[in-house]
Figure 1 (cartoon, rainbow over the protein chains, first blue to last red):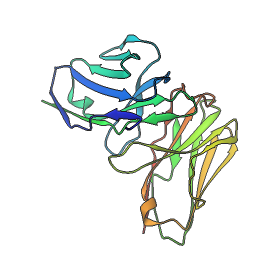
Figure 2: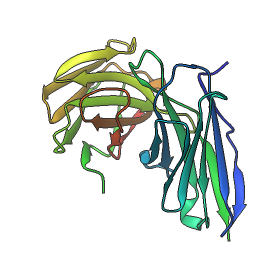
Figure 3: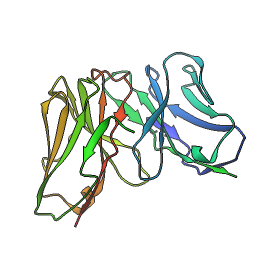
Figure 4: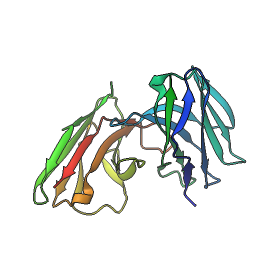
Length: 111
Length: 114
């Protein structure tokens, strides 16, 4: 079992709809969770961080964390073509020594 | 625009060459990282420097040699690389090297080894 799992996609969502990206992790002791966006040929850029159970909203983005289910998600409201990118879920292991990245979900927003 | 600057943006080298990748940040961060990313794969951690000391080396081959001259600069010296080392090399920084910190990535160096 991979430490951080994401569906590779592509996930195709119509413009204006809600895009829902999911991530599961295997280390029950994980404490810190991040979503990075990476455009093709570019470097990852932090979108959201979340550290406690529940929802955290920032503009059109909402991160959701459920530690009991070992599940973290990212919702993008009013999806725009500029949201088309690969979204990387990243998790800190319980040893807290490093961040582990998932393989990413490719999101495509169709006009 | 990223506040972590990497040079060069592209590099083509032969297997016998010696080259260096450079990274600079002026955010006052005390931790700097090297990641390697192959196409359609996640970034893989190579090295972490925290307060200018090497704190993590992810069993990287010795043909990759990191150097941290000061808290703002990070180099990656390359020697006798293999074609499979071709990848995007990303530098990142964070405040103090704790794993709950946000990473700020540079734009990367696309390396091709012939």
